[in-house]
Length: 155
Image (cartoon, rainbow, N blue to C red; front, side, top):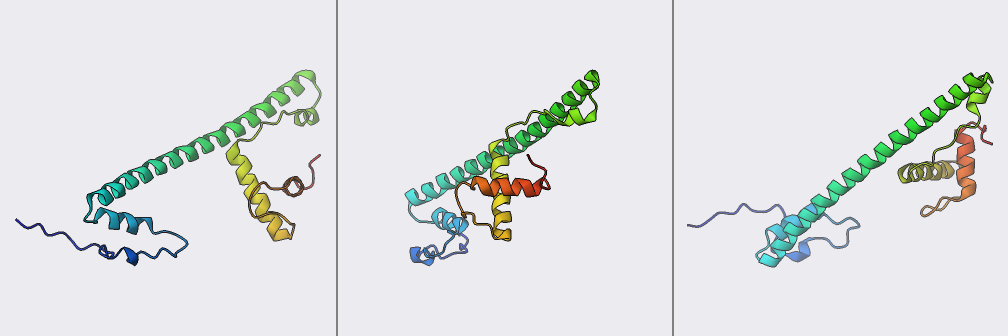
């Protein structure tokens, strides 16, 4: 019995049909080419690569969930610190101004630092402040961004 295999969308007979000069490699087309290849080692490699990409996507989703949970935890810790400061101020009878002072800061997680860096970099570019496109955002740029973000009320 002869099995009829549907024709793939891309040309599987010509390895040169995949444009290697593109900046972005078409992974789906490459995996389809590998899955339809007549050589078993190429088909196996394509299958293993697809499985690896699926695991990588799972890890990325898990990392994003952890970053979001860390952000919620930091917000909750800040809220708790403010509430504790307010309680201390109420017990001491020092008023509401004291509730806002002495609030311990919580060190932001890596996701929050990256996000602040991205925002500071975009802000610096929009204001003409010199900032490298990659790497660590300079302290003077972060300080200026934080002053602007806090309305100039940062100590």
